[in-house]
Image 1 (cartoon, one colour):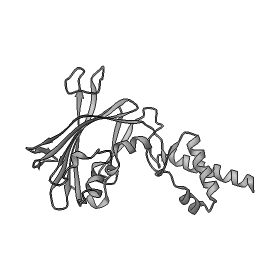
Image 2 (cartoon, rainbow, N blue to C red):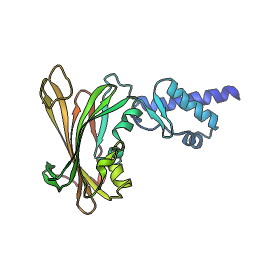
Image 3 (cartoon, rainbow, N blue to C red):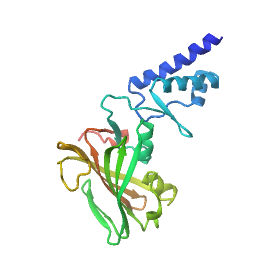
Image 4 (cartoon, rainbow, N blue to C red):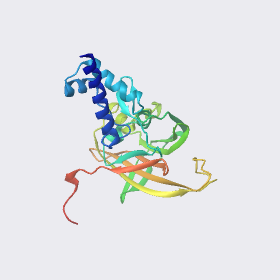
Length: 255
């Protein structure tokens, strides 16, 4: 029986590793929990725990206390994949996503000020305006000491009073919903590209040769049509990939 138990945990861990290798489980995805393994495979909690430990010991995943076990980024180029079109995906915080993928996050705030006159931006051909006062927060987001994202967010202080007093470590969407109890309706986002030249005054990436970057513009709308946030961020093109998440109901026949 002991040998059977040992064989079982190795079999289960191999199955999960195969799911990671095949791409079914991506970097940052949550590995089935002990309870899920117990239910699925009809095994003891000891066998379930050993299965997860085996996956972690082989470098495929990492355990985060209180949250679960997550797939590590083992790709040779260490690209980070982010999903466009998934409301759930963008509710995850930048820091949590990096930790799940095996990176150490760091944030440097360059500016955190209250703008009395508001802000406007054009996103998906839609003119988006937030009346003042608006919190402007410009910060640099690092993973393993490499600047990955140059992020600027403009947040309505009419919708979110005193948000300038929060540390903003959680994702902004989570803060809007859980602290300010806003009902969010949609997020509009556009993705473009540009080249960051060396020595440019607005370039914080410290690249020694011209660097391709993604430009992400976004706006968050509440259910009553108010714009609570406008974002403009630059992502390193050599570190990020973007995937599209489209629901079937969004596909409306031949065009």
